[in-house]
Image 1: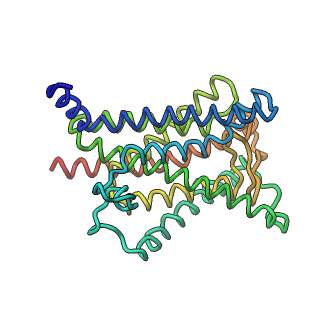
Image 2: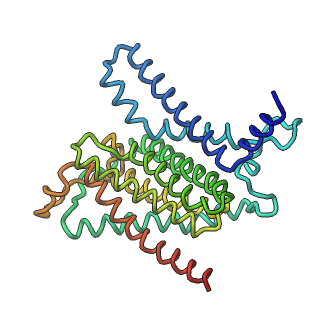
Image 3: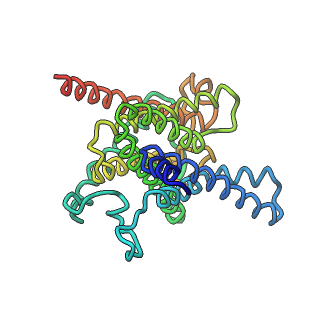
Length: 319
């Protein structure tokens, strides 16, 4: 190999966008591979192809969590020396030892976001109950105790999924920040990519109009999280607070109040259905649409608050 070719390959490898391309390639290949393996295993067990495809879609959260973490580790886990056999979590996250939070700080910084997420979700449910769009039926009795292990498992998986999305945004946004003027374009592409991931989890089997609406909800959510990343300092602790708030919000809606995702309802402490409001049958025709409207309502409020922060910060930088 000539020196010019070696130099060209070295420049490409050191370019800010090269690890981003590598991450996308590894992720989509892994995602397709894992989905194919699950479908093949179910088909060999005697299940029809339609059932296998549905099971893969129902486990989209698990597939995304695994493939995102593996792709990130493959691209960003750099050993500090040739003799080192493992990369510590601090090294993988790219946080210096001087800025690494103390153990007690992790707990202290998580309490307020956890409470905020639970409070916002509960407030949204309360408003929908008072306006008659929702009604609570079932559970909250001794029978719910038998569901606690299943609820805990589902909640843990959702927390890991939110953490994997946040880790992806943290690593790629830091890398894109080195690209100068292309940072905005890169962050926009990152928001679209995350919107695709959210759509894969939240999409339903409805018609074209419902699918388009769900796509807008997913992009809205992704844009909100990207805006949140822009106004934060992109440290591990800032990401930790964001994970705690978003995970608390999602777990509260799905595992406490029973809001369904794309796979339908899962075990929860309570079950929410359409209320007596005369418009409920028009805009909440299925449980999936109910979850979509709730998500877009809550995250619209978040986006408005963050947009004000972004504009205020921009004016401060301009001054």
